[in-house]
Length: 116
Image (cartoon, rainbow, N blue to C red; front, top):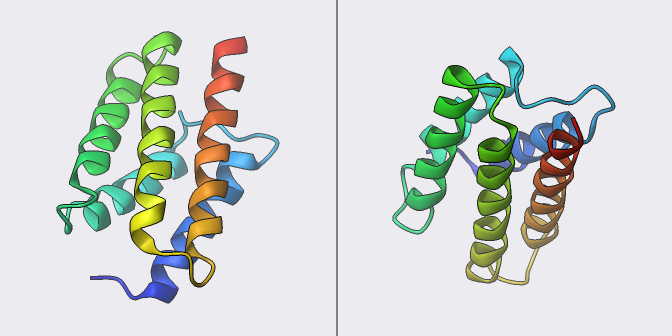
C-alpha cells in the first residue's frame, strides 16, 4: 500500500498531466499512471469500482482509441465516482480538494476529446 504522501504525489502528477497543454489520455505516460491507479485503487473495497472503470478506460484506449464517445463517457463516469468518494475521505487535509481537482481535470480532458 502506498503512503499518503505517495498517493498525494501520484494525484498531483495525474492532475498536472491531465491539465497540461498537450495532455491526452492516449499517451504511454497516461497509461503508466492509469496502471498505478488501478493497482492502488484495487486494494480497497471503497475504490475497487473506480479501479474497474480505469481498467475499462485503459482497454478502450488500447483497443479503440478513435471511439471518443466511449472514452469521454468513461472519463465522465470516473470523475463522478471520484467526487462520490471524496466525502468518505473526510474534510480534513488536502485530499478532498485534490479529489475535486482530479474530477475537474478528468472532465476537462473528456471535453477536449469530445471536441476532436
